Each structure stands twice: as C-alpha cells, then as structure tokens.
Image 1 (cartoon, rainbow, N blue to C red):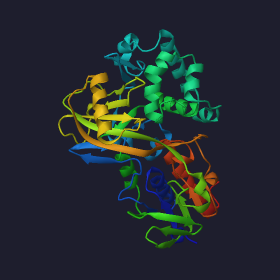
Image 2 (image 1 turned 45 degrees about the horizontal axis):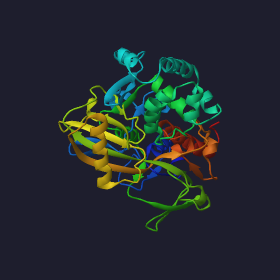
Image 3 (image 1 turned 135 degrees about the vertical axis):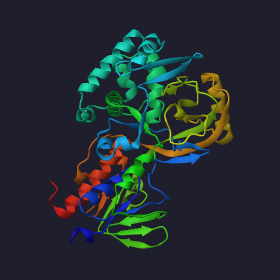
Image 4 (image 1 turned 45 degrees about the vertical axis):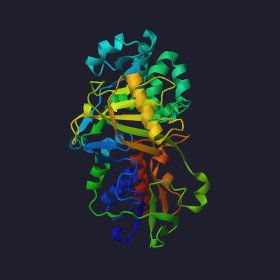
Length: 417
C-alpha cells in the first residue's frame, strides 16, 4: 500500500490536529481533517469585534515552549512580548513586581514593592536558579504535590502566596486554590524564566493560522460533526459514514467511542470579559492581579499595551474571572465593572463582549510532558492526540499531535523506531 492510498482521518482541527497533519504530510501522506466548526484553531481563536482583536479567553504563548519553537516561526507571528512581572492592585495602590535580572526597569519597583518579605524575594531568586538547572524531564518525573503545599514547603510566606502566586497562577491554571500539580507549576515557571510571555500581533489565532499555512495536501472538512467512531468507520452527525484506515482523535475521545463513555474529562472553566476604556491604569505591558479573595476578578490586561494589528483607537481591557460565583449575564458584567472601579480605579468602561468558556483547560491528575508514539494508540487503527493526553498547554497539544501521527507512521511503515 503506497502512502497516497492510506486513508488517514484526523478529528478536530485544533493545534494538536493541525500538528498531526503537518507530521503526516512531511512523511508523504494526505490526511483528511474533520472539523465540527467553521474554522480551525479549537480553543485558540480570535474574533474581530468593534475594531478590536478579542481572543477567546486571555491566552499567551510562552516562547520557551520547545514544541512551539519547533513548529512555529516566531518572526512572522510578529510576537509582542509582555514584561516579566505583574502589577498588583492592593489597598488602593499598584505595586509592580518582576524579574529585574531580565528587565532592569523592574528592579526598583520590585525592591520597593510591599509584596512579600525580604526572605520571599530571596526565595524567588532561589526558585529561579533551581528551575533553570532542572530539566523538563526531571520536573515531570518528580514526586507531585499541590502547588499550594509546594510553595509553603519552599518557605514562601502566606502573604506572597496570597498577593502574587495565587492570583498569578490561578489565572494560568484556572482554579483558585492552587491544587494543580507542582509539576505544572515548575514547568510553567521554568518556561516563564527561560523565555517570554507573548502574543502574536494579530491575536492568538495567528498560531493555528500559521500551522494551517504549512499544510499543502491535507483536505479539511469544515462544519462536519462526528457522532461516533469505531475501528475503521467514522459516523458523521448527518448520518454519513466514512471509511478510514487510521483515525487520530485530536479532541475529547470519550464522546465518540462507546467503551470510553465513562472516561469523560473534567474541565476548568472561566469567563473573559472585554471592555473599551479611555486610558490605561497599567502603563507597561504587565498583567494586573487582584489578590482580594472576595473579588470575582482574577487578572486584567490591556491588550493595547502591546502592538496589535487592529485597534479601534482607545484602550482594550480584558478581565479574567476564574470563579464567577454563579453570576452570569448582566449581573456578572456589572459586578466586574464595580470591582474594576473599587480595586483598580478604572471608571469609564464600555462593555464589548463576554466569553463564557466551559472547557478552558482539562483537569488532569497524572500530568506528563512526553508520550511515546505507541502510547497514543487506542486500538490498531485509532490514535489519541490533544493536550488532554499530557497537560493543559499549547506545548502539550503540539507534542500529542506529533506523537499520534508518529504512532500511525510506526504502525504503517514499521520503520519508525
């Protein structure tokens, strides 16, 4: 059977599915991507509303991600980099803290900030040094504990955990108790230390768009929902059946395969609200944190503090709410506006759009960094991809897509060892 003769279908044109298609194409295959919606990207999308770029949720690319460096061309993404730090709103004041070793402008604000103790600041330097030396492999093979107990064990005061670590990492892990595995904390912290958080000038969707441009011979079927999958058959929602030699599922498989029905993944959810404002209370490209436990708002960011392809002329502010405490619609919007005024002194806000994202990040217990191609194999003909195989990150989505494609190739050619 020649390469061209093998029918390989990939379900889901998110980051993982796109990378799987790239790897298959590089090896001479012509995969078919099946996507339920009208465009690629999965959870990584950007809408244009009122002349502003609105990402589906506040997302960033960590430039140190090894898989992202492999599959993306950073230069043509025109990455706009955040400063390595945060602006903390507390007691009516803004305190800036950051990594002065990487950006000298953060030295004095960090030293003078009333966030944590002198010991905390030394502990941060120690943690930076420790994780610079620690390999990603070691991070993911180490004993896991909650991030909360990890930070306490390292000797951080409850003050800095409350004022910085909790709001900052809650915004990344999308849960506000820091129950996420210390493996994920160490990995993300290491990535922040070795590169930058950045956004493409055109918004986060530029990432899947760039992956799509790398595809030359893949057929993409949009607006095509799959209802079930068995060994060589894909049943579409419209009743049509597709024959397939190999199937890569780059989305949640439990909905599609009968014997996986009881293995559904739990997800972290969040809300992201966008507002237009007259001016910026945070002048530099820093994320704003609200460490008040009663506050709905977890973090804020002025997207217009970075260069954007489109800009309607004023300032664009995104607000992330990790736990909406049962509020939605107008109640959520007005409570957020009230808190922006109370905690950040942000008064004139014009609401643009609210994204309620029920499946933001998978809740996974056993986090891994890597997976071997054969481990992606569910059956002789079905392979699993998606970040849900490893850990909730763009990097993991890429690795899982690549490994599932290599799993298919290993099976087909018997020469990939």
